[in-house]
Image (tube, rainbow over all chains, first blue to last red; front, top):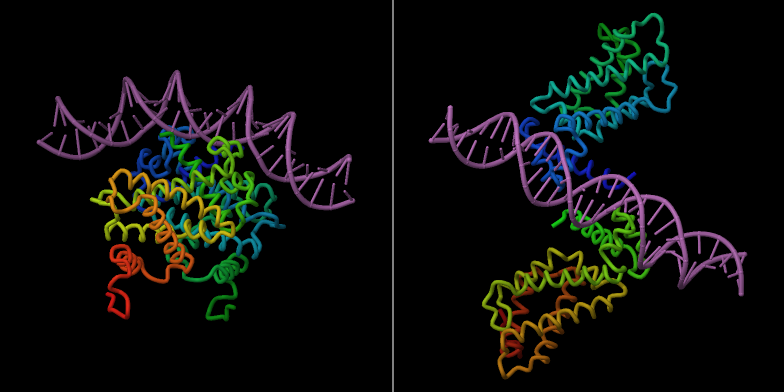
Length: 190
Length: 190
DNA sequence: GCTCCGTTGTTGATTTTTCAACAAAGGGCT
DNA sequence: AGCCCTTTGTTGAAAAATCAACAACGGAGC
């Protein structure tokens, strides 16, 4: 509502991201963030408890945006449709700088774990809200999807997106819906 | 001193310049400026009396910077040295967008007149401060320099700087110091 | 002429940001 | 260990920006 809040928050977060791209997270100080954001040091503390809170809040916001973008406005029985999947990969493509930072940073396990934790929570909520097929166990399904998705996404991003989003979606879609059935023993996969 | 002052002023001025590049000055409203600057309308009035004040203050600041850059740290008897002249042209090169806007705007006479007025005042002050050679009349010298300088600069800028700054300086320097003497009748000019 | 609508410039109450100062804690260096 | 310098997190007073509301003005269109 008040413009100043948004401006200051954004300036701080942008500064943080800039610093993340050239320094290790632990070596970044509040002073540097404030200076880079051209904001008084006190202002940083008005918005964030400390630099961990800053990192977490930003990460959470990004994940929320990603999930919102991934599973919005769709029939979404219990698995994403092909079009939402494509939107997701394209979203990742556009925000590559952020996710690349989060995954390739030397202390990436922190971020990876946080990403997985958040994804797990959100996905569990989602599956609960749509009354999952009785044959599938919720927690196992969640874990399966998270591992597959995060693994593939990490691979894709770290390797600088060697295939276009459309190809990734096609492949991922096939694996998700048909498993490896019909793709074994040199069977033709289109 | 207070960061907010600088930030707001700069945001407003930047917004104004952006609008100037696509609209006529008279058709620009305070509302548009505030919106483009992402600043409350009241904030504009905190810094500027009205849009004319905004235009004038910005123009004055630019001219001051230009003059400061043009005749600083030099023996500067009464005419600029070659190096300061070069600095000036290079300064203009870097701030081309601003000066181009000021000179090519459809209502350019306003700006032109203002530029000349300010230049006249500053140049007169300067010539007074250095006790001009008795053989040269102050006001005539001022008018001569202004006309020549502004004319050449306008020509140079409007034609998108067809020659590099160094060439402009060389030519301008020769004309300033030797007049056309020695350059007539096909005499070699290097 | 009249109405409608946007712009203008101003106001006052509220909120955010700034600055300077502080004590406490941490890391590096001798 | 001791010293020095930076960082940290917090505080209170002061300054700036925000928002909403206002009356006045002016132009466009009926």
